[in-house]
Image 1 (spheres, rainbow, N blue to C red):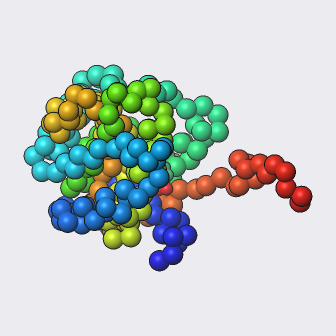
Image 2 (cartoon, helix red, strand yellow; image 1 turned 180 degrees about the vertical axis):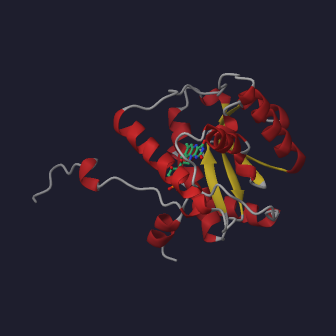
Amino acid sequence: MTFSELIKARRSVRGYRPDPVPREVIEEIISVAKWAPSSMNTQPWHVHVVTGEPLDNIRRGNTENMLAGVPPKREFPMRESYEGIHRKRQVEVAVQLFDAMGIAREDTERRTDWVMRGFRQFDAPVSLVLTYDKYLEPAAISQFDLGAFSHAIVLAAWERGLGCVINGQGIMQSHVVRTHAQIPDDQVIMICIAMGYPDDSFVANDVKSRREDNKNFVRYVGFDD
Ligand SMILES: Cc1cc2nc3c(=O)[nH]c(=O)nc-3n(C[C@H](O)[C@H](O)[C@H](O)COP(=O)(O)O)c2cc1C
């Protein structure tokens, strides 16, 4: 697969086989992804690879907190809602996913079930929790670096037949993750990446999200044509 084929073929995976992911494979993926660029080569990331009982405890804690109506507790500021074109794109991909799953607009039970799956990190066998050192705050540039690293991880995983979904839902109750993954106090939890072998019978895994036409977000300045 060329790089262009790889980056276009990757999709977020939200249905996994229960098979464990060998530690050596995860190690190899991280060894590839760490070649992502970072500001002044700071490589400001830490990766906490979580599976088994600690991950089950995180899923349980996330679910209990969300059901109890505990407001999101992330460790960095973030808007809770999108507007305009961003909201439109958010809805568009949600409609694609619900259509694929046959979840009707008015079926609140199945819609809630879908959201709760997200808080369980889609029952993936592994979750990679990405953090950075707290002293870097305000850490916008380091957060940018973790974004580049995350993309490299999901691409390296896809190249090896593994699926991922980068997900904010998994760290929405960060204190739960911090406790069960034993994250040191001097690190900030940024994001997590659910990883596992895709369940090919899970139809949402086939959803291909759309991308904007370049002309709507690219400007060329100083070109002759
Ligand atoms: C920072 C970030 C957070 C995300 N959080 C979630 C999430 O909480 N739940 C989810 O189902 N998908 C989540 N996603 C996946 C996006 O919905 C997905 O990347 C987007 O719809 C494009 O689809 P694709 O990954 O299949 O190309 C997240 C992606 C990123 C980059």
